[in-house]
Image (cartoon, rainbow, N blue to C red; front, side):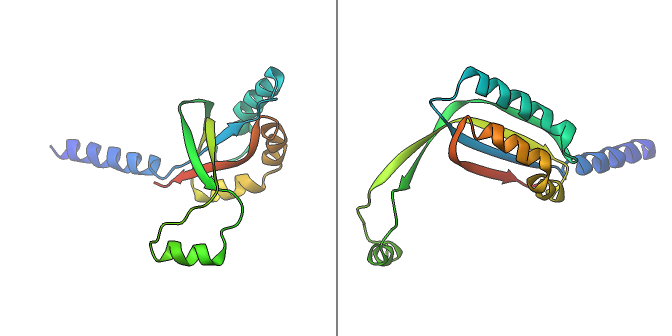
Length: 145
């Protein structure tokens, strides 16, 4: 019984160490003019990131099974409309819908690794390839342990 408890405790410690990882995911809108060569370069560059950036373990990328539709206000919201919104009143504003069709998820060892990734030269090089397949702007979520 004592050996079983020790094994369970060791397993729990190992599992909790794995749970410290952070998942960084983002969805994006494709550029309609992106070529198959642009997409191939994006896939190749994305797949190579874990070998270039410390603390980045795995990456997943591809077309979303269910594209996301996001509505955003076009232009600036005037101060009077902001006051009405804050008061819970109905306001009519011009909006546009964005469709996020693709996504990327990256597994980082911890939050510090995610911070370092953003400043890494390999990230800068990857961004040049990524920008050829996506409309500027993403919907990003970070899932903490």
